[in-house]
Image 1 (cartoon, helix red, strand yellow):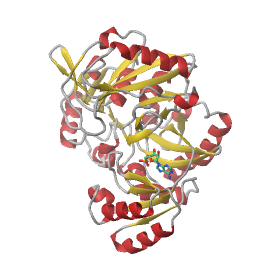
Image 2 (tube, helix red, strand yellow; image 1 turned 45 degrees about the vertical axis):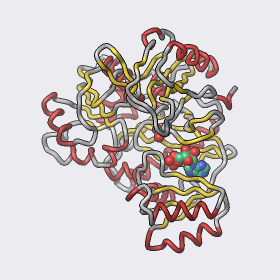
Image 3 (cartoon, rainbow, N blue to C red; image 1 turned 90 degrees about the horizontal axis):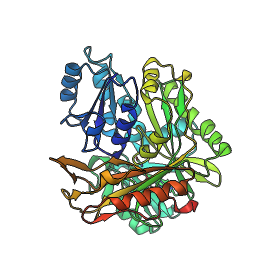
Image 4 (cartoon, helix red, strand yellow; image 1 turned 120 degrees about the horizontal axis):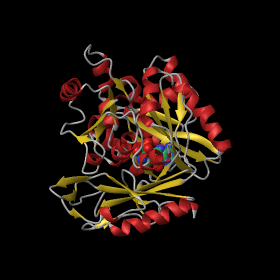
Length: 424
Ligand code: AMP
Ligand code: GLY
């Protein structure tokens, strides 16, 4: 297979690491990639939303598989762009059509979809400029805390949770009238707050059949004990201790199957990953969000625990024969701890020299925000490196990552010291 992977984060590093191990891998390109992805394939300087450049490259290199790592190109319709072009339509796209990507691209679409298919999720209502006053009245009588979500993609920043009704009304006003989040905030979903522990479940579907990958839990807040600002993710563990058979069979019956069947019934083309952001409320799963791609940093623990050949799975996706695949999970636990630039997720420096990566021998270091400068690797983003380890237990894996990351240093580095804390 000749694969073009789009992206430049830790997720794409872990995907490239996994695909490179397959005997089916004839060529692997990563656009634009980072200093680490160059170990597994060839980086190509190209934007992930530059469909014309991607087309030219695919034709020149006879790419047969396009794998968008992040939601952006999918929500922008890269699938449809390829399938509507006679020269490109034979290429397998690992990801849904633009319509399918709306599960992530529009919170309101996702909520309506869940209602249509009786998939458990928080009670909600959607408002825009046309029923703005009703939205304010709705907030007046809503219990607190209340959750406000900008409808469109807002780079993980479009969700506000508050216990103060006046603040909720202000946020709501800013989103709709003040153009906060631009067009993404023109519609707002107001949602009931659910209390429980979150986890991420991943299905890989060909549109009819699906398989479930190892589940994971990520740690989104910058501060220990899940405090402070939201980030792209500060670490992850897999497996998730409470995701035992009874809970997971509820997830399958009430969430995963109705989602895949609902997409098929509505004739929404969907081949690729479905990321279910779930919350466990007293043993019952509810959907907090859908994503149309793998999670980051979850991929940095899911791919290490997946024993199947990912490219073989992608072939089955292309052939719509995922019913022939049985997913094998490693019996080992995996965890990842993110090294981030000081100041992240607010202002932070880029271009600082990183040392010591090569000294790490008992963990896998997946590059996220890095770039190569001659012989030197420099920081190039807020989340810099994901240090992933295996262990017989989550605690063993965590201990290994915390030991390994001592070898690595760059100016002002930061990380959470309590990944996996609930399970200690
Ligand atoms: P989202 O962008 O939809 O994943 O929301 C970001 C984060 O907000 C989630 O990971 C949850 O931690 C939190 N969140 C979203 N919706 C709810 C809800 N209905 N109840 C409680 N927490 C929520
Ligand atoms: N880790 C959450 C996400 O990828 O959206």
